[in-house]
Image 1 (cartoon, rainbow, N blue to C red):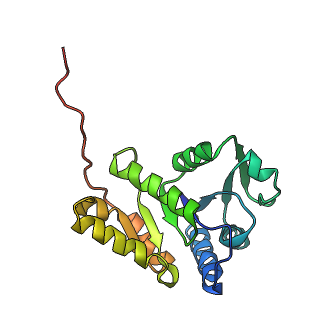
Image 2 (spheres, one colour):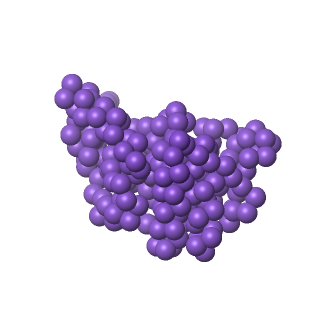
Amino acid sequence: MNHVAVFCGSSNGASSVYIDSAQKLGRELAKRSITLVYGGASVGVMGALADSVLEAGGQVIGIMPGFLDQREISHKHLSELIIVDSMHERKARMAELADGFIALPGGPGTLEEFFEIYTWAQLGLHRKPCGLLNVNHYFDPLVELFNHMLKEQFLHEKYRSMAIVDEEPGSLLEKFNSYEPPSTKTYISDTSQT
């Protein structure tokens, strides 16, 4: 695993534990020589994550739409900052570069990014691990929702297992290293039509 994309908030959150955990993840990525791929901001959990990777001697690639860069929130000291045209292009570039995906606590944007990449995994568009770093039990309600989806038969067990949940960055990354994606369902017939 050479590159990990991290989706996270551009706010600090209500507790210092969110910044502390982002910094811990950043140090863990740098220690393992894993390049961080993220949204490119200098603020909030995003900024703390990038700063911690850089301070530990690691590499950081930021990907940011031009309209956000113009608001002067882009991080000016990254290994590489890629400016793209849209939010859609940002997510596509992150997906292309990353070997795995982690969501840290964040708001609707963080969840939207995570759910899109998680859905792509279910559809077989990629076979990369998707994880939730469950800092301060932040994602407990989401895990409960996954369990409810499973119970109500809107989510299959093998797809539920694609969302890897852990409270510690190191053990989450270890789970990424041993991840074996399940087979995915296809609606395409193997027989060609004549």
